[in-house]
Image (cartoon, one colour):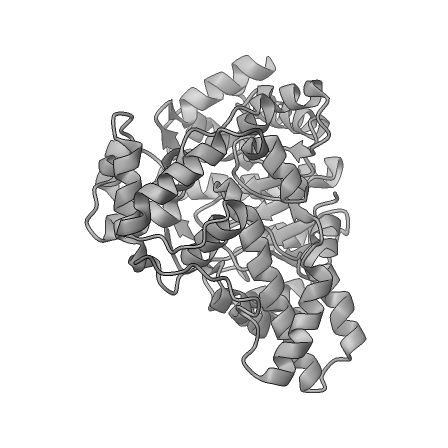
Length: 470
């Protein structure tokens, strides 16, 4: 007999009864606030075309590397899940997920998925082998209805604004179409220049030099010259801003920055644009470009986001067969104090610059990130990210940064996801955890209840809106 699917109303709130009661009261005031989603990877074509999603597997499994990486770790071939295999049977793929759903016990993915199943689709039994077809049929049938089209879900989830992330080589045709449609939903872009900033970048369409050629064609600039290359960035940033962008995003391997002289930077660019560089020179170029981008942000007002510390595509065989973003990105140790100093020496005291720092290296929270953000006017801390976007990860972030950086040098929550239906679930988790943390501070007489109420509103809504200039 199927087991019931139950979302306890006090889930994730503190166990102590008095603290839980206060956390519950704080949460009740912020649970229904609009969602500010200032950084993520949803597909803008969903909102441009507003076509129905196809089936449960296409929407919930194939785009979600949190799900398929766990299944892969247990020996399930990605091809059987429909990853890189358009011939895979979506129902059979869903059955594999269902039969292995126990693997997700205790993980954030389990919480997010259960929320989607119960709240979005009204399912009241647990996903398992014996409910696989019920789930697949219920979800797939719902997706064929008007109320489950992308724009209807956007409105149902009370999303005030969502930012997608595009390369400078993207023409943003979907964002143009959204604007031309007259729909009131606010979907904006963010400038992610990695394909034309990283000399070692490669994907299925080629590498850095091929991307420079495309960059030249798109902008009319000669992007194989240093002045033309910088002018192309200025041009594309202005276009992205015209399409609503308020931020840039930089997914570098490290947080290294540099402050080369113009002549040194131009000489380095000649090497990387010719494809004749060492790994150290590639890293130096990425470092210099972070500083160049900071200077551009001072000029045009785009907020910078730095997401370093991921060893991308660690599984070489998987990358060779399936390409990028297939669940094989692994956190690595990351230095910020020395790495950011060249950029901060040049721009760190300029309040016009806003640089939001993220990390996958939790050991840097108290030692480096909180002290840096607690001093430099240009720095703020992004929320617990990726592998740490979890109840325990969020609590570790608060406990290790608040004493030095406070709350007001952080930026609230962003979901950073490709899984559209998980967005409200992720924001709900963050709001519950923050309300629980604030309730603890009140019960320990470290904060008044009215201060906690103000902060719960800020962390759930205000801080992200302010930090991303929305």
